[in-house]
Each structure stands twice: as structure tokens, then as C-alpha cells.
Length: 104
Image 1: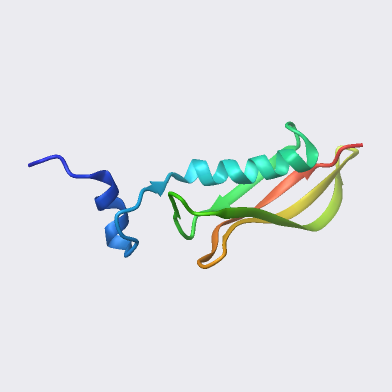
Image 2: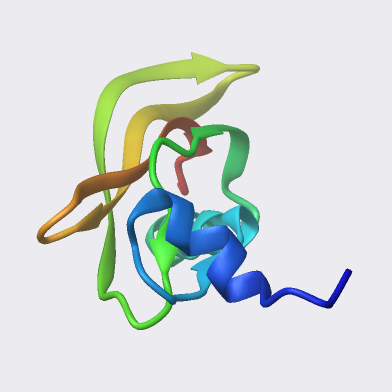
């Protein structure tokens, strides 16, 4: 059996053509970078993600989030957030929740 192209095997069954599918951790890293840019490199207390769609090479995606609750854990303020990775045409590609320590 000959060696098959990973690009063709991964993307073609999804109807996405011969494009490389970025691995889930790469999309997850966009979410982590967003949270770090907001509250610093040690801010993430908890992170839960789902991967309802794939991210393809060359796509422009935007990491977004919204605060759903503010509370206190061990005398420290935290923000509970809904977070997602969004594509203009295909909508939400990754979705999840994060609990983030608030500076100050």
C-alpha cells in the first residue's frame, strides 16, 4: 500500500478540499494567547475547550471572549469567561470556558 497524502486524507472527507487541517492545540494556543494578553502569563486557572470545527491553513481566525461571572476563590478575584475562536464565514470553530485570575 502506497503512502497517502495526509492533507488529502484529512480534509477531503470533510468537503474542504486539499487543505491542511491545523491540529487542535494550535487553535487552543490562540485562546491561551488571548487570555495571557488580557491578564498575564499566569492568569489561567481553568480552561475547557471543545472543537466543533477544524481550522484550516491560511484561514483568518479571531479569538474572542466574554465575562460571564466575577467571583472570589481563596480571597482572589477571578473571571469566568465564555471563549471561542471565530471565522468570518464558518462561525465558531472552537468554543469553551475559562476561569482567569484577575490582576490586582
